View 1 (tube, rainbow, N blue to C red):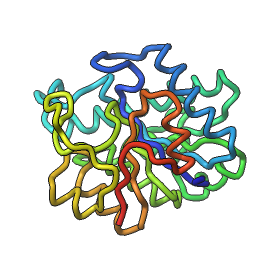
View 2 (cartoon, one colour; view 1 turned 180 degrees about the vertical axis):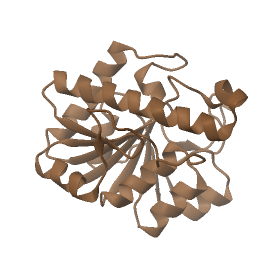
View 3 (cartoon, one colour; view 1 turned 90 degrees about the vertical axis):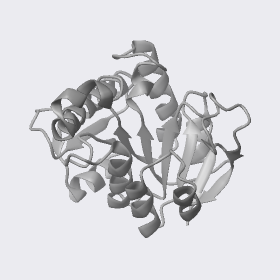
Length: 232
């Protein structure tokens, strides 16, 4: 069982596949999946996306720099929503970021991360890397390294990494394990090269799972054979 875990979930987890906005039922599902893990004393950090609120193609009119900043603010919205949902279930968390001075968002520092964990709380990292032109995948890898995570778990809507999109290509091959070099060489659309590079440099494995399958998050934290494992 891993003791320090970074979970990266897409904004889509808050709305449901192919939908937009914030769905209370999906919020309940996310909280229940997280609760199973934190009850075991895991030090958990979470990075969320914002695809349920803003998608890149929808913001193309304003250009990539502004679009990325708008997306970063979207992750703050989702982070606060998640923190509030967790609180309703008696789970305490701290939302931290470099990009806003909202009263409910703390300034991200390494001391704050450790203090949060020492008090048995979840660290929710909003605002991406705090710089445009970087995705939340890269933000997840960065925060995983900063918090000393033993593994980065990427929660998606697919049960692992495939050679091609399994919805479009039924004969696509699923990989149970890959090295970072193999994933980059095969140009698999699972995480950015910069995210792979960060995890490789800090020897942080990545496990890609279907977060929408109940119990998968806990099983991955228990180091069971779920989804696809990427490592050095």
